[in-house]
Image (cartoon, rainbow, N blue to C red; front, side, top):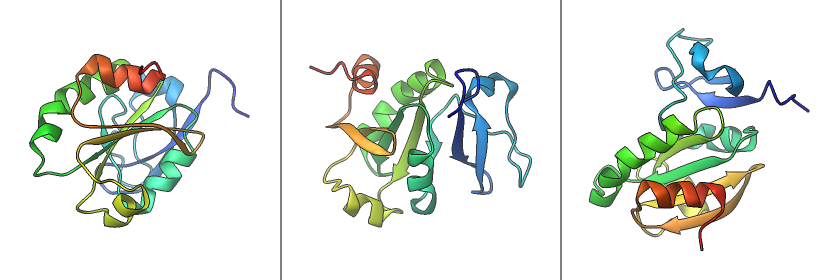
Amino acid sequence: MESATQQKATVQCQSCGRLNRVDLARTGDQPKCGECARPILLDRPMRVDEGAFERVVADSPVPVLVDFYAEWCGPCKMMAPALDEVARERSGRALVVKVDTDRSKGLAARYRITGMPTLAVFQDGREVRRQMGAMPKHALTALLDGTVP
């Protein structure tokens, strides 16, 4: 078990795709990828591909807010700034990841994604909450915190 001061999560490098273990308590130190040495930016939503999804979700000691989206989806694009704000404000306390359902059809089928955007919260590797449709920042944080009515 990791201490409260050291919580390591597995995240996918946005540049080369390699999985990296990062200490969430040190997000301000701007961790770098072990393969390509590019910064791993945890203060914004991270794209995760089908091959890395299960590992990222299962290895996270903090809640993971997953945005199942599509590039062509207008409501998904409208909601992007709110997701950016949540990722920035919750950096180190939550992960915000994006899954392109057109590129990750297996994940979309496995999680029965029938409309976009679909937001899901995972804790301890399991989905615990879900909501479909674009929503403002306060609704995203309520979903993440489990205070959705």
